[in-house]
Amino acid sequence: MIPRYSRPEMAAIWSPETRFRIWFEIEAHATSALAELGTVPQEAADAIWERGSKAVFDTDRIDEIERVTKHDVIAFLTHLAEFVGPEARFVHQGMTSSDVLDTCLSVQLVRAADLLLADLDGLLAALKRRAFEHRMTPVIGRSHGIHAEPVTFGLKLAGAYAEFARAKERLVFARRDIATCAISGAVGTFANIDPRVEVYVAEKMGLTPEAVSTQVIPRDRHAMFFATLGVIASSVERLAIEIRHMQRTEVLEAEEFFSEGQKGSSAMPHKRNPVLTENLTGLARMVRAYALPAMENVALWHERDISHSSVERMIGPDATVTLDFALARLTGVVDKLLVYPENMKRNLDRLGGLIHSQRVLLALTQKGVSREDSYAWVQRNAMPVWRGEGDFLTLLKADRDVGAKLSAKELEELFDLGYHLKHVDTIFGRVFGAA
Image (cartoon, rainbow, N blue to C red; front, top):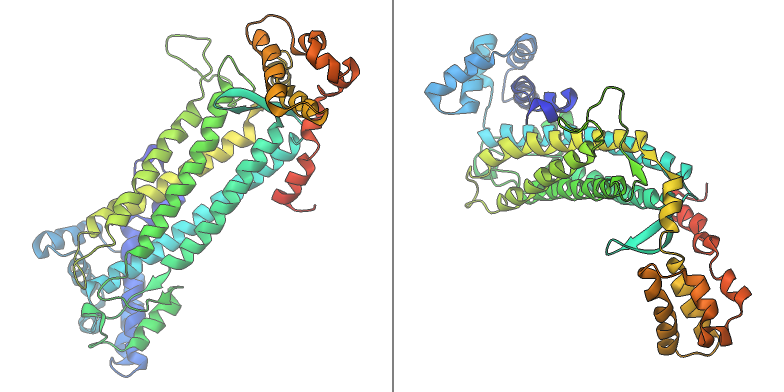
């Protein structure tokens, strides 16, 4: 997590100050629950809340204590006792460190998911607006990077919208899956703490009790969460690469906004490079990279070990902060994207009508010609066009076999661009609904 790719609200979730405040809330809620059950004096629970709520936790002091204890939760509890006083003896009754650490991580991931869901909403809104703006803007569709048949730029964006809508659905599920609480004590048996405490803390922290927590929340939940972030990052990269391709000088159908005073190259003043989408490609690689260690964290020894701990201290902040930044950046790219319909039309016409070859092929089969012969007749007229030797329609009209089956007028009708776009509204209806 570095400042260059961090946004303040997401970064704040992972700050030490936020973490210690969540730890305090977990401990204080647990003490309140114990007070309701009669295990802890109510006055002590009230004192813990009153004094702890006013405390400003000193991260340097906690680090100082940890250098001696070699244990972060004990260091925090020792520091908390400095504020609370004698009543601190009732804090952490029957609990183990993982109860605090895992429940805190759940809270942080839920908060991070909420920000990411808001990011997706912003991106979806930008994609929808631009998709309708260019709903009927024709552009060449490509397969293998080669001109295929016409689509519209709006369809490209509608496809991205549908993909990120699926991403949102997955993240909603992942958020729900990760929102669990464990206050079950050593090895998860509730031997020294009543299960009702877990229910109480879960409700107060916006979580649900973990069914079986051993001594840790099962890490398959975390693996699914980070895998979901990785898939979202892959969708970010897919759209970023599409824009990068469209910005290539030889294509130039769309490009990133280039602001006043912006420089593209330290050596070449003419350059306008797709730096934002290139950056997004790199960031997507990093977010995906965090999914694998999350999956490897699933297999812990017996009821617990801490091999997952160091991993999560890194991937929790880094994956969420990076994806938050990437989604916000992609939204800005889409929102300000420069689109060049004239260049799209020029590229559509670049191959001299070859983009209509399938229509001619199908028309010949409808006239009784075998598919094999139809393919051969169309291809023998297409190949010279690839070499720059005439245009496709003229060559077809001059072909004796083709002319015997299709009149000049019929051939001309097969070169109608609108034919390829007749179902755009149907596709838009599937993506955006009837409205």
